[in-house]
Every structure is written in structure tokens, then in C-alpha cells.
Image (cartoon, rainbow, N blue to C red):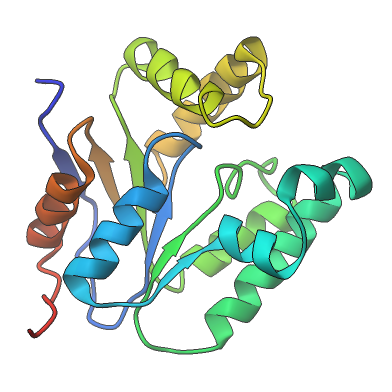
Length: 195
């Protein structure tokens, strides 16, 4: 596959009124794609990481003070509250670890239940873990969060096979976000905003 080609695997059709949940590791462009989709569709955009920072605390500081499990619990509560505010379709950008809790745990079950209320879309740069890993890790390291290469590499490799099997659609692309958004809108036959 050409690096700039966008491949969309539609695993089930989108149904009118469903919120789009953007899923994937940090550094794949979920937030940027979310902004592009919100512009094209004229739908509200919810970025859970930004909402967490605006309503609770900076994520890294919160985790340092309260631990990762408390962060996950607060994040899930916030997601449920945000989703309950409206039944209109929205673009919902999930954090990188949203589906990363161990299988069968309450966090894992609850995150999947939330996503099942809408349409889950996984975004990855390649189907080849050896190509995807350095791309994602490098993007994460450039974000200024003080992350370490070895741990980010391992985290991505651990989550990669899980992500490949998640979602109602899978997008594989390294293309520009506007082109990915346009391809996705066409593939899912999403309703364009009326000008």
C-alpha cells in the first residue's frame, strides 16, 4: 500500500444519528481528524483529553497525584457525562488508552459499552507493526509529554493487535487529515453539512 493512500475497512454501515468515536493510540492524528470531520459534517467535537484538562486537571499531573486507575475511572465518568448531554451525533475523540484496560475488567467493559452506543473508528498509520511503531512513537515523543521511547514503543506494540480488531471501521493512512476525513465521509456515506 502506498504510504499516502487511505484505506477504509467498513466492518458495518454507519447508521444515521450515531456518534463517531475516534479510537487509536496517541500520535495517530485522532484529534486532528476529529477537527476535520467536525468541519465537514458541522457536528460538535468532543476531545476527551481536552475536556479532562479543562474540567479536572492536566492529565500528567492528575496521574502523578492520584494514579492511573483513578485517572481511568474519572475519564470514563467524564465520557459518560459528556455523552449524556445530547443524543445528537458528535465526533468523540477518545484518549490513547481508552481501550487499553485489561480484558474483562470493569474499565474495559464500560469503555466498550460507551463506544457501542455509536460508531467506533480505529485510526492507524499502517497494518504493519514494524512500519506503524516508529511513526507513532516518534509523534508521541515530539508532543512534549516527557515520554520515553522504549516504553512508548512497547505500549504501542502491546496495543496494536487489540486495535486492529476494534471498531466498526478501520482507517489505515498516513495522508493529510483533510483527505482522510473526506475519504471516510465518502466510505460511510455521512451526511455533509448544509451550507
